[in-house]
Length: 219
Image (cartoon, rainbow, N blue to C red; front, side, top):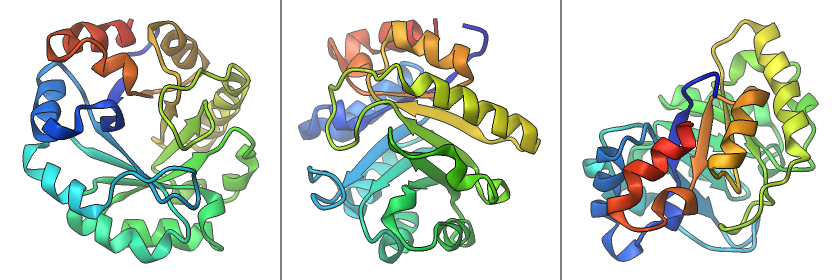
């Protein structure tokens, strides 16, 4: 790979009975961030974690906590997640009426602000508001469940967003989530991604395998 990408293991694939230990183990194995998927059973067809889990994990986390909110409406919950310890909060344009206002609020609360693109969401959504964005997350699966296969159609979107970031002159992280493996990681980075979220590909094999799994994603 041409760049050393940020690796953000998704704790959705961790052993939920041992979350604190799992967080410490992936950090020791070389994780750069922790990715936390929050689902409400309404915006996406699954229910996962809330602010209390983020708060419980914060004392174990020595790396940034990258929180992806798959909830609608999203605005009423921003403060709770920042107070719980989220360093980055990413939201979907479809999860509230005014994306610009939501991103500004995340920054006001002291976190970095991200925008998430579902497979069908057009990059044009943020064309006129790049100054409000710290991170862009491209979903290479339909959000809601782990373990899905990578959608190669999203590589062209990653390339488009890379060009938009470069044209803006801003230091915006371009992250990819969904079906990321050692093979698809290379495709994502070659298309312009600078951060990779991986669940199964990191946590497969248990703690003894985490370092090798993360190294394989880096290429």
